[in-house]
Amino acid sequence: MVRWLLLLVAASPALLTPALALEDGDLTLTVAAETAGKAAPYPREMVLLRIRGTYRAQIALEDLRQPSLPHFGWTQLGRDRWFRTAIQGQEARGFERTVAVFPQGAGRFVIDPFVHRLTLVDNGERRLIEVRSPPLPLEVAAWQGPGGPDAPEPWWLPAQDLTVTDVWEPEPENLKLGEPARRTVTLEARGLTADTLPPRPVLRTRGVLTFAGPVERQTRITPDGPVARVTYRWDVRPGVPEPVTLAAVPVPWFDTKARVMREAEIPARIVGGRAAKAADEAPTPPASPWRAALAGLAAFGLGLGAWGRLRRREAPAGPALRALARAARRRDARGVHAALAEAARRDAGLAASWRADPRTGPRLAALDAALFGEGRAPLPDLAGLARDLARIRPPASAPDALAPLDGPRPTRR
Image 1 (cartoon, one colour):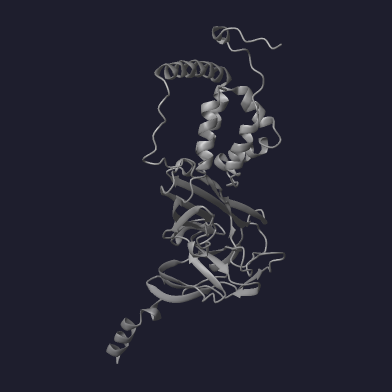
Image 2 (cartoon, helix red, strand yellow):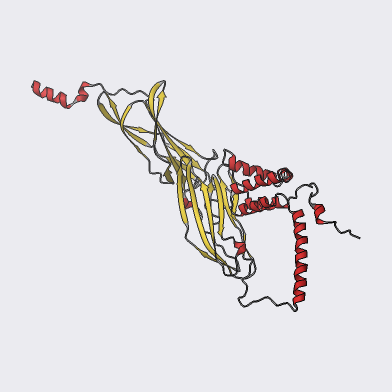
C-alpha cells in the first residue's frame, strides 16, 4: 500500500506544490485603435491595432490568436516585440504586436477579443492560461460628398502621403518622328497596400502612339504601416512631325492626416519637336561663290553680335535655372532643392525675390518642410513651381563691366 502511495506522489508533482498564485492585474491584454487623423476612419483607410500585454509571471510558451476580422483586410507590421517592464514596481514582461486593418465598409463594428495562450511556470509547475483582450468597438464613417469609397470614378486613395515620379528615356521633346521613348511613372503611397493602388491610366492623345507595358506592384512593411508602390511603363512614339502635348493625368487622393482631398498629377509633356529630315534632301547650292563668301561673312558678324548680346543678357543664375527645370520634369525634389541653392549662390537678389513673392514663397517653404521636416509634409507641384520661378525677373543689377568692350551702342533718333 505504501509503495502505491509513493508511485502516485511521484507521478503527481502538482500535489506537492501549491497552486500558482496570481492577482488581478498580473496578466493583462489590451487592444487600442489608432488612425492618422485621430478621427473616425473612412472605408479602406488604415487603422493600426496596438495589441499590448503585460505579464508578471514566468512564461515558457506563448501563442497569440487573432480573431477572424470578417469586415476588415489586414496585415501584420513586423514581428512581435517582447521587453522588460514593471507592474506596481515589480518586474514584469511586456508584449506588443501591431496589425494594420482596413475596414471594407461604413458602420459600427466590434473587433472580437485577441486571445494570448500562455504556458506559465512556477516552482516546476506548468499551467496553460488564456488571457483575453476586451472587445473593441470601431466606428467607420460614411463618406459625405462627391467621389468616395463607393464611387467608380475617381479611384479612392486614402493615404498618409502620395508621391508621383515621372521618368523619360530619352526626353520626349527631343524625339524625331517615329523614334521611341520609355516612360516610367511610379506612385508611392503610405498607409496602403499595393493591391489598392489604381490601375494603369490610359495615355491617349492624337498624334502620339503609346504601347502599355507591364505593371509592377510592391508593398513594403514598416512599423508605421505599409508603403505601397506601383510602377507603370509605356513605349511612346511621335506619330506626326509636329510637337504634340501629351495631356496630364490627375491623381486625386484623400489625405488621412489633414482629412482633406488633394490632387497629384502625372504631368503633361511635349512629345516630338525634331522632324526627321528626308534622306534625299540636300541643301540648295549658292548661286555664286562670291555670294556664298559674303553670306558667310555676314553670318559671322551677326553671330558675334548675338554672342555679345547674349553674354550681356545671360543671368548669373541661368545654368541653375535650367537644372531646376530638368529636375522638376523628373519630379526630383532633392535635385530641385540643389538647383535652388545653386541659383541663390549665383544670384542672391533673385533668390530673395522668390522667397518674397506670395505665389512662390509658401511653396518653397513647403518644399523645405517636405524634405527636411519631421511631419512628412506633402511635396508641392514641382513643375508648376519651376514655371512660376522662371517668370520672376531678377532685381536690377550693376552694369556689365565688360560692356565697354562691345563698342558704343547705336543712338535712336
